[in-house]
Length: 73
Figure 1: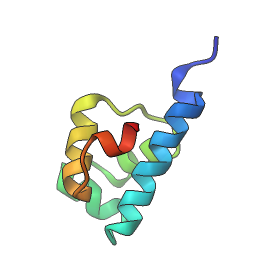
Figure 2: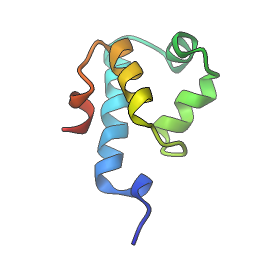
Figure 3: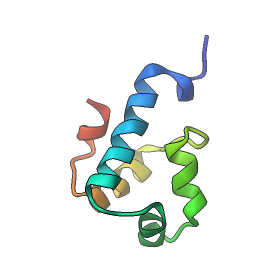
């Protein structure tokens, strides 16, 4: 069984997160500042090196002005 971080569904979530960031006109650094995290934190999420938990997804959704469900549809 493959790890869920590499699943097709998780890759789609990552792609939606990255697309929402770009559509919001934000750089990884901008999002990291809003979350009080280093830029590498966002980079690792978008590259699939770090998993996003529900609380983080909710915070990212607020920043991108989207519903959390948008990312997991």
